[in-house]
Length: 304
Image (cartoon, rainbow, N blue to C red):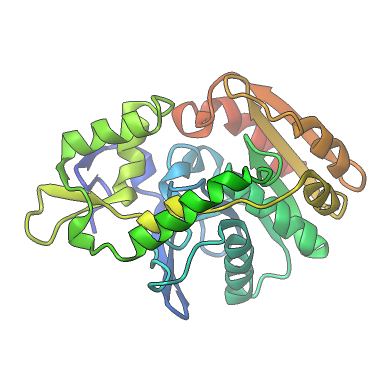
C-alpha cells in the first residue's frame, strides 16, 4: 500500500513515512493500527473518538515520536480498517473499548501501558486507568475527562430501532459518492469542526472504494455505531475517578463547551493522582487541526 496516495489523499509530508500498519487478531477478525516510531520502544496506545479512526493522530504523532517515544494508534472495532462486530452484536462502546484495550495489552505482553485518548478514546483510557490502576503509567485525555453521562430515557427507543435498521443493511445499501463529494459530506457531518485537510486525513482510513468502481467510495465505519447508548451516572464516573493513580494530562479545547461535571470529575481524579490540566485554543479536534498547540504540552508531560 502506498502511504503517499491513499483513498485519493495526496501528501509528501513526513506523516506518510514514519509508521507501520499492524493487525492484531481477535475472535471475530482483527484490530488494525498504525505503529509510529521505533518498534523496539513500547508505544503509547492512542485511541480515537467515536466514528473516527487511527488517522485522528496522523498530524500529532510525527510531532511526538523520537528515540524514546513510539505511538500505536488503533482503529477501534467498527472503525477504520478494523473488523466490524459480527451481525447482531451491538457496540457497548466504552465497555467494548475497555476490553479491546486489555486485549492489546495482553497481546503485546506489556506490564504497564501509557494511553492517549481523544474524546471516546479519553473515556476508554479513563476507565482502563481506573480498573487497572497499577498497570497504567500515564493517561493523556484530549477534550474529555470521563465517559459522558447517561442519555435521556426517551432516546433509547430510537437507538434500539436504529440498531435493528442498520444491522440488516447490506453494504451495497450504504451511500456511495465520488471523492470530493465524500469529503464535502464529511466536512458537513463534523459540523465544520474539522478542516477540509483534516477530513482528507481522517478519510484515508474512513472510506474505501466500492468493488464496482474504484473512483466511487463508501464509508468504512459500521453504521450500527450510530445506535450506541451511554449509561453512566455522575456517581459512577466519580467512583471510577478516585481509583486512578497514574499521572494524568488533561487538555481541554476552549472552543468546545465544557460539561458541567468536568471540574468535579477532575477533582475526583486528583484524590489519588497527579493531574496536569491545560486549556488550549481550538475546537474538539484541535489535536488534528492544530497539533502544534498540544504537542509541546504532551511532549513535556511524557518527559516528566
